[in-house]
Image 1 (tube, each protein chain N blue to C red):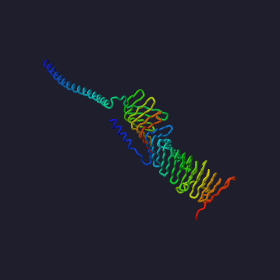
Image 2 (image 1 turned 90 degrees about the vertical axis):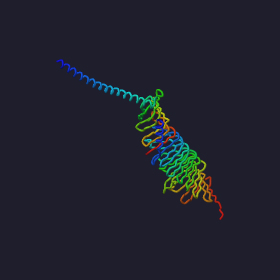
Image 3 (image 1 turned 180 degrees about the horizontal axis):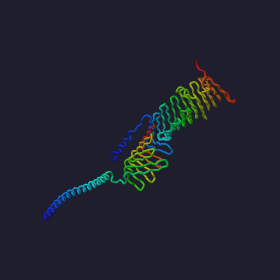
Image 4 (image 1 turned 60 degrees about the vertical axis):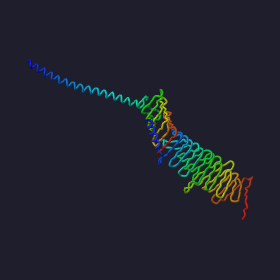
Amino acid sequence: MYMTYYDLVVKLNSFLRINKKTLLILSIFLITIFFSAIFYKKGDIDKKEENFLSIDPKFDIVNPSFTINNAKEKISVTANKGNFLNHNQIFLKNNVFFKSNNFTLLSDEVTYDKKNQTALSNSPSKFESEGTEIISEGFSITEKGDIILFNGKTTLILKQ
Amino acid sequence: MKYIITILIFFSFQTIGRESGQTEITTDDGIEVFNIEKYYLLKTNVKIISDEYELNADLVKAYFNKDLYDITRIFSDGNATLNSSKGIRASGEKIDFDIVNEDLQIFGKNSQFINNKINMFSDKEIKINNITGNFLINGPNSRLKSDKIDITGYFIKGKFSQIENTNEVELLYVEDKTQINIKTETLDMYALKADYDKKINIIELFDNVKIIRDNELIVGDYAKINTLTESYKVTSKESRKVKALLDKTDE
């Protein structure tokens, strides 16, 4: 009986010894994965933040979007980023698009007034409508898009 | 990065140019697009080039119909010139060109319209309709000149007809408070008013009539001239007489 108990203890000990080792390896493996995952995630977040900061540390809005409503049509205004100049005016930058059912207008830098629904640009601009193309050194939109003024040397191509 | 994007956009924009069938409009000081009123306002040193015509002016108002490309009327102001591929040359202070109705109006000092062998001049206005052939030359120094006839007067109104690709005067009315003058290859006619109808080949002259042919001068109050036979009849009011002066020539 004593021998049997001893044998059992030895067996259990050896069993526990094996389990301890396995558990230790397993624990180390799991901890490694856990910390790796945390470090990877943290690194990714830092990387993203670093990217944002490297584009422009001063921008206020990413992918700003507005709408100009007039009696005839809706004109959507989109850009890659924007900065608030004051409560109403936003300086839109990169791929600034004015788009309605009738036309698109592309520029790189536009000051948009959301209260008066006006826009002003002094950057090269391209206007496209069916059969119409206007290239100018800038533009301004007034009267909720009913009047568009293209500034500076301007070329208008009409295709029939 | 933003500079590269700007440069790329700028150069991609610059690559556009007029192709056949297109109209190119360039300005030095921009274009205003009025969507409700349906017109473009083109400012400073405006050039419009199409297959059919070339127009230059200081300021242009170009009206469009339903679509932005559908130009129906061009009103140009300041040093306006219009040259067409069909040989028309027009210039004046202002030119109003109705593309749909083929109606051309030239305004201001030194207005002129040249179409092959027909020249029109005025210091006020010239109006021509290419479809109907109707024309009007109104104002000081108004003149209609072709290789066959030379007409001056304050008010010249008439109609062209096209015969074998040449324009001929079909109807003509000339008026001036001081004097009108009609010169043909053989006749030099003066009066205050003149009326011509090609169908009946008759020119009628009214008031202060004077006809000069070779060495012959005839004065009266009314004259009726047959342009085919070149025969004429001159009459005068009761108080006055027809005067004929014959100049002797050495033989």
